Image (tube, rainbow, N blue to C red; front, top):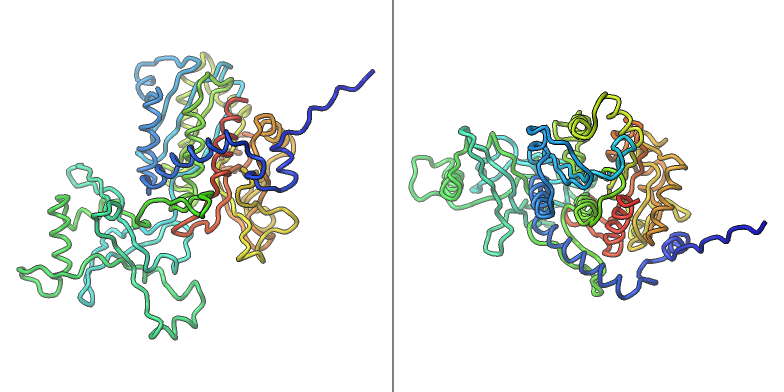
Length: 479
């Protein structure tokens, strides 16, 4: 009996095996889609500098495309039907978008999850002080940063202040071209002999990340010792109607000022703040929002907070947040034993943990994983079988069967992908939300975009990779 002819491998699959740049074989029509999509992403990245801003931006986009608050359906006890689009919001920081599939929810969901928080400098509860004829802000860094990278660059202040009355003020200073910016000063080289002899991680201390905010004293005032501080407070009160005590109920962050930019003479890359992990958040949200037809399986996009500090807190994934959301969704989808239905829905689900990975950097090639195990710029979406550190500690470690399933989905959809890991064994490592969702027996694999200069104030992503993430996440939802 003659054997069935094998379907020829897709161009994307061939590129994956060759470890070749996606730009080498991309067709002109798709290249235009890459640049158009990345123009939209770059604008998003320029406007969104905090998890609250990401939440509001993507929620606005979702509601324009028919997503409705699940709280309204819960209050009305309204059953969810195939094709229904919904969202759940947690404290204005974590956002879950969903579309009800044509199959019963107990057949499993298709979930993609990224995070919207990024490394930054947070203001302390009592941040404003005066010293040396200057007003300064005391900060506490958030997430893993190299502290020396944050000095002498223009900084913008983003966040919210909630007054004792409950009134909420949104603060943004330093993004408009007419705005002033803030800065952390550094020691001049003429006096930096002792500093230069310190280890890199000791030359700038956490308590040394004080931000210069003013130097002009008030013209009239009783105080001589805090005249500059009082002047800054007077300006803030004039613009926002806030007092010094209001800082204690605020979430204010210092982030790099200015828009994301095209990088390279060929404009093949994007340079911007917070691409870890808003590049994944944007691409997976757009993949779900842009779906035209009802997907086979109920599909969720998780846009979560607090990943950079361990997914803790009420808006992080290492809480009951996801479990509670699933209970509400299942309640509106099934009759009978809801607990069993929820457990079956989770056990039969599939997930992509959409988080970024490291790229091979020729400036630091000595830390790259050898033998083609390091992801490369513009070589496609990165599949990461395991994260963690040393001995795979803290890793999800996806099964061979599930990796094969994802390979099949991507190759069928002509998605260029590659494999990668965070550096040499014993050299590096990192964590994502994958193991937190795997606890429900969900098949999970880490799948995201490679970055250069990860966790730096300005990170680099390839436009080809960004588009392949969008294309790959779309294929996953449709599969």
